[in-house]
Length: 317
Image 1 (cartoon, rainbow, N blue to C red):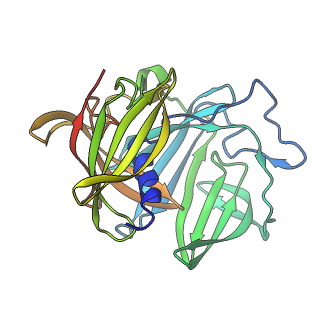
Image 2: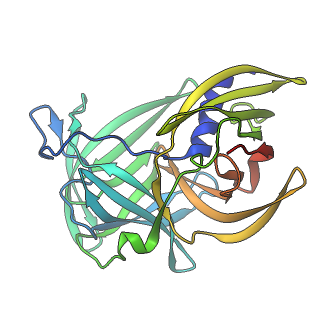
Image 3: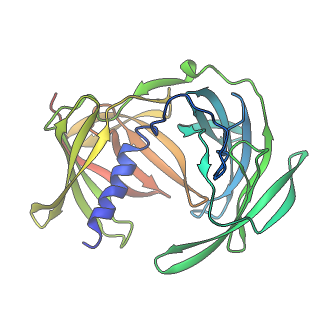
């Protein structure tokens, strides 16, 4: 199978998710230096928010999202993302985002432009970019704005608007972080020898393959995962990757309870629909997670098609 290692890393990212935040240096200034620019979420207080529409490549429809800062500490902001479903905001996930200055991009903005976002007019810098995917070039234009939390006012891909900020605010009432989050790690409670076997839809050629992820080493704050692929009736093509065992904050009470059958075992799961951002495009994913399975993920669907499913697993403490 071509590029099986790249596929393995892609699947590991799906399974592990954003397990660890970027390590930050000690308390230093968040002000950008001579060759730096302000981070997109820097300079905003807890409660700052932005609402935007994202064009989904799956159904061609625009979906509404909201991002807000729930906590700021040690040069990081905890940003919560929600999606509007039946006129209600449903929390989709959260991540820690660095507030430290970024390196100044090599390309300069092509123009300055004023956009109306909600009831406000904002000044934007317009940047043109080109992405290459499978030897195909895609042009993208972004309207960046320091006045908007997250820094992005609008994005076009080709001749389509794929991201559009529709409103924002600098303060709002948000629940305390401890009320909506809890610390978790999908690998922390599984000892050396624990394993999980997946049936995967290869994103490159849409063919099924099977991979096995085995914990081969456990240190204080990380685990070493061996990844092998089934070739005929034998496991070959092995590689290893390290995952953090540090707990991260995840949303409490997400999704609905469900039970899946895995190799004759009844596995208690939580079923959740969420959205992933891929190069400015929103992709809807349905996911079944369980604390009883190494890696946490039991099944994933994209646009109703199963792309990852646990075939079997074993647990060692």
